[in-house]
Amino acid sequence: MGSHGIRDRVAIVGMGCTRFAEHWQQGTDDLLLDATGQALAGAGLDKQEIDAYWLGTVGSGLSGGTLARPLQLRDRPVTRVENMCATGSEALRQAAYAVASGAYDTALAVGVEKVKDSGYQGLSPVHIPGDGTQRTLTAAAMFALVVPAYARRYGLTTDQMREVLSRIAAKNHRNGARNPRAQFRREIAPEKISAMPRVAGELTVFDCAGVADGAAAAVVVRAEDAHRYTDRPLYIKALSLIAGNGSGVIDPDYDYTHFPEIAATARDAYRQAGITDPAAELAMAEVHDCFTPTELVLMEDLGFAERGTAWKDVLAGAFDLDGRLPVNPDGGLKSFGHPVGASGLRMMFEAWLQLRGEAPEERRIPDTGRRLALTHNLGGYPGDMVSFVSILGTERDSA
View 1 (cartoon, rainbow, N blue to C red):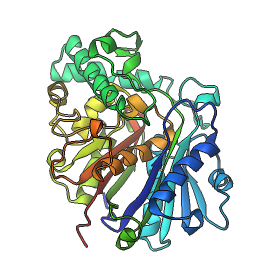
View 2: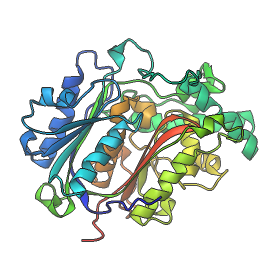
View 3: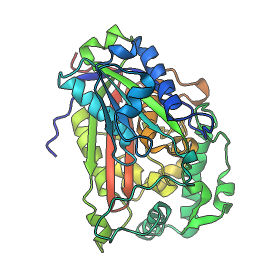
């Protein structure tokens, strides 16, 4: 890939995140005002001091007016973006590139989704007219195919796979139980997760992320200006995004044990950031655990474990809060639910708290001296994905 990246040219200087929940008493406007208000206050800026805005939402608004109206912005460009489950991350990517280009000095990215009162029990679908050959399987059914494929390739029994998946869900719920912004705040024993009703293949109810309303926001400025707004900025080391061409869903050799788009974005992001050993150099990672087998495969696609070995690392606690590389210390999609437009920025908010030492003590990652965090989103299904990876850090190497 020929991406040059914007390493250390842009910094995040303020962030905000609402609680992710069933916000029956709040609308999209309320969530946007809450998240952007926190981010602006953190940076010590007024809304009119932001030069340009990017709004990420899949189904909660159709134009920049969705943000300009509640904020009552005057004479400011507001761009609405959408890229499936990477929508919030895409908003940050666009805002960061705009500042890095020199077009603007300050920009704000915000992601929002109001799902619960849309009338759907799941995520609101967006059906674009096509040639009539779109898939008919649900997301749960598509990701359920990963389970037997991984077990067959690496020689796991059904019971072993069940233990690994329940261990992932229990870890994320344990972390989420310690996070006041999470929707689901109860620890759940792996045995209970294994005993829950199946919804697709071997996936139980608790192998699947829930649905929620929420919003998150970030203020970005030029890196050289960052200390005008905060003494602890986060520098953007890498932003990588790939939109897959969908060939996997018609490929008879697609094996469902890894996701090529994810591996490609990880390679690109590590190259941009100068990372050669992610498992040893990253302090933490927030990954897109839409389903528990997704997180398992991601540990290998993102280079946190060798192919065919992540399941052993999961059982050994390598990705626990006190493990060698904490994954989803905020509780992940399993604890937060998935308001699509907001999830990517919610992940960055956790990196913001953890790298700055502001996460609550009960779920703070160990101080290993590492100063880099990774966030990851995927949108779509096995064989047809959008993938995003960011690397954020506390130190500006090129300063």
